[in-house]
Length: 323
Image (cartoon, rainbow, N blue to C red; front, side, top):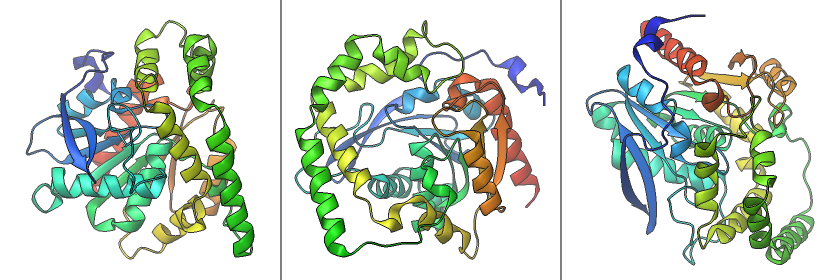
């Protein structure tokens, strides 16, 4: 699949795209980026675990130049957004971030004026996007998930535990992550070659010389409250109710009366969420659409941006002409 749209655009490699701004959510400072004409259809980019709006360095300006108003949000706990949580917010998980995203769309984008939004999420960002859709379908035109995380997506949850077991599990998880030396572990990873090893697991190509990528991930991780935010995520994601997990979210979306179309984009060489899981997911939910990119890993939007951008723009063009 080829297109001449990329012949007129240089390869963007700077994470400092668009205009950097801040917004407040529940008294927490939230960083976001924006680029493109204010009158254009809104498109929101949602990063994955450990990343930020900077990770869309090779995508945002391309989408803006093709006629979209592009926003990139830093979820609370990541990037330049707040990491020091206030007392009323103890844990972070996809339902919390979905609420943050919905408020961002309501307050900053204003769908009444600008129309429904296009959401493009990488991994955790994709989970946040579909969680938002399950709660607020009135806000969303389409979702592009690249890819969806959580292997539990492939099978619905069919069993339940007594409440006392769940309470014990929750207590043990909290104890474990409060005792586990997360700050020491983060410092060890950042100061050794472990950071390159960790990042490489999300890419098919070599990232050993990509200093910009390493900076995108390591600078937020060096902030004073990074370990506190990570602890809040570990506990929050581990203790979620079934309703906040993949199977329940997908089933809820499946039954929406006016369900927006969803495109899954998967790297064929994704080591973190292997392609066979995507195929099982599609078999279980054939109303989802899947596009596989060869020679790409988990962060395919950053690894093969030209191909990724082309797929996204074609999907959005077909979406527009089909209505």
